Length: 86
Image 1 (cartoon, rainbow, N blue to C red):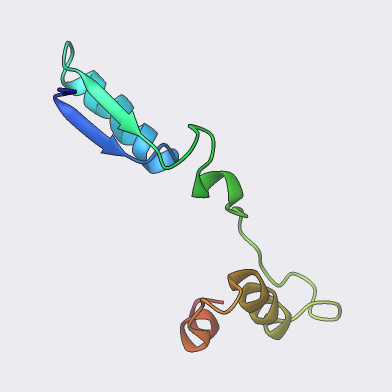
Image 2: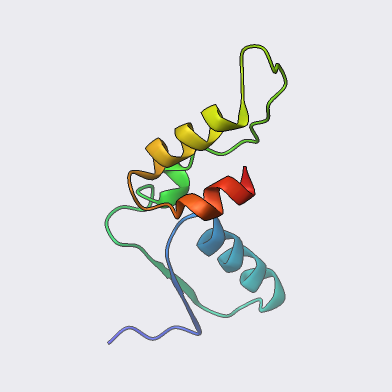
């Protein structure tokens, strides 16, 4: 049986940030990070990141950003929320 002081589920940016901060605040404690497959197989790895904005009203639009977000969301986005956020 594995024993640990802190169990972190997920090796993405949130899990690793938590593990590092916990290690800093609790030196000497054992911290275990578990992941679903490999340590680099995380949602963070696939996140598009960044900030997009409409800078050129002639070649860009909020509608295009909404469409891109809905396509990237592959049917998982709430369209009304996407419209509010964009």
